[in-house]
Length: 451
Image 1 (cartoon, rainbow, N blue to C red):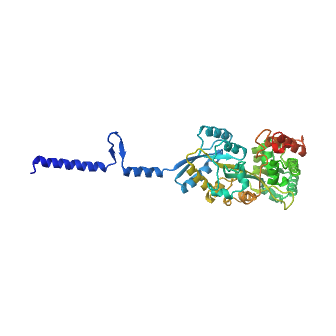
Image 2 (cartoon, rainbow, N blue to C red):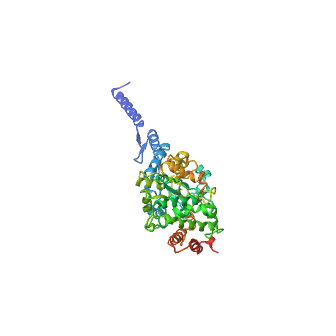
Image 3 (cartoon, rainbow, N blue to C red):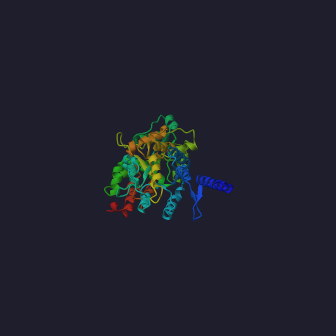
């Protein structure tokens, strides 16, 4: 028999049951005994989805502070293709880069992707155990990258520790209006070159915007520019490094003689000119020719937007000779071995090496030519001519002779060459004596050149 109290009890139990059901469908319940709140399955799925949508962040550093905008544009294009990865560019000033990078590596705070300099400086970072070895399994394009490019980031045992990023090349820029005024054409041989210079000099025009205040200009923009066509490019350079040839090579001495002859067409007082003074002299139309690097046209045009310039590569001795172009690998992408974001790093490197990534690098970083084989062509005719001069996959390139191994101790090749060439221009040394100065200095510590 139902009573009033029985009905009330039944109603109470029904309400309790309903409340329990509602609580079970809520976002959380109390865990008995520990006072914590347990997240429901639905909320766990939502949290997991939110976390998976958040990109993995990696950082990239180099010494190219002047390239912040181009690199950020490059990164933005990468992130469009790979929203699962976010890249932050953290450049450091060039003169501070090596010391800061070493400190960060030692303290475990270095970036994920590291700009690595060519040859000895980069190799020291690898030898210290900070860089992850790379293979074509990591980045397939490595298999088709030229050995010349890879050599700058390859250990003695053949291990590759950097993905080649870009390179620079040498050549000559000339003022096309001055050339047209005197009916001149870009020279292909050294005889033609000096005939052009003689014509200009006879008409009161400074032929070459040369300088000697900063020795590196004579070494990298003159010696490494014209030298390969005299001493035989990579054949001689490699033989010299192995001790199978040296600086008494007749072609090496002849290239020094040619530098001496070039100086006869430099501006009056060129000894007080630094790199930028000579460049400004050319940009102002005061000289017809300047030996330069591929990074220079943008700087020159920024000084004088109205100047008309074009490019020719270093002349050869005789028409039909192999035409080498002085160049050097400049930057590689190294992988921080201790980074916890290896998968994201490899996604970034593979994209940089892809045709799209390579062609964008060429477009956004003019004059810093991309090292990857599928980097396409350039829109600017002058820069495309310069890029093409080094040949397919840098097949005509010859690396600066002072860069690899012979600059790792003192007296280094660069220091010795600077002393020798300046003394030669000042009449204190003959070309033969200048070559001997370099040879003797390196033979004092570089084993393969010891006699």
